[in-house]
Image (cartoon, rainbow, N blue to C red):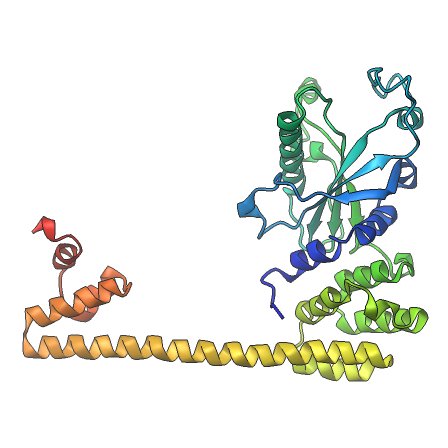
Amino acid sequence: MEVQKHPHDEFFRRYFGHPELLASLLEFSLPHDLTATLDLSTLEIEHGTHIDEHLREHFSDLAATVALAGGADPEETSTPVQGPEHVPATDRAAKCDARVYILVEHKSYKDPWALLQLLRYMVQVWSEQRKAQPAEPLVPIIPLLVYHGASRSVGTSFAELFRPDLPKLLYAYLPGFTAELLNLTALSDAEIPQAPAPLSAAIWAMKYARTETEKTLAALDRLAATVGNALVEHEGFDILKLYIVQASPYEPSEFIDMVNRVLQTATLKEEAVGTAEKLIEQGKREGFQEGAARGRREGKREGFQEGAARGRREGSREARLEMADRMLKRGFDPAEAAELTGLSEAELRELQDPKQS
């Protein structure tokens, strides 16, 4: 069981990386008239490279494509699609045999530059498409921001990133788009869907696991009482229970006490307690390993200190040079080696590069 460095991001990426769960999230999050133009049964998770490799640790975007609802008219497929001012959206969807790209950005904190981040990803998607299909029109992208930070207000218009007092003439030259927003912080408990159960459980967890863990557990208990073992047996449940334990502000032992007090469903209680106990055992192993490694590091440093002190007492420059050389080869900082051996920085540089002598 791996403890995640970024549990919120990792949970979102892995849990909603299942197509049926992402489809249920989109159906709940997007406006009804928008989802009516999409055939969510055709959703496919994209595993492309539009997100920079060095950013994957920090951002948990999900990307998917879906077909537009309605069949394509063979006589219309070769006709250029007219702009929105010419053809109503519903008519265009019925005539267009195309897929729509959906980019989901998850934030567990308020990031004023989230929309700029989304725009960057959108441009990367289009750039990759241009390379792969240079003759095709660009695919439309629906950006969705899923947010559950402390603040209740989140911007959704890219225009908000610019100064509000700019001359109106300049706005014609500014890029602009609006992201759809699922603001879990502002979502009331009554608005949380009761079905499907895996979606409901995830929303309760993201909204309350790190602030009101007991409320999350109580909600899962109600769901389990309604759907039976279907929640526990769902393929994403292992990811969900690990997230709840890790996102909780309580120590695993305290979490177990809460589980025993709140949960009434036996299988749910067993799963939650088992996860917390595994984290306790893992913490013990890692603590022992870290303690042993720290002891070795401290012992090594004490050994070097003792050797350096002995060299100084004996007045042997050769002994100090030998000790400094060993320290540098072991990765000690030159300044620290100089301090412990009493050698000058010039003498250390000579050790590192004998050609200087």
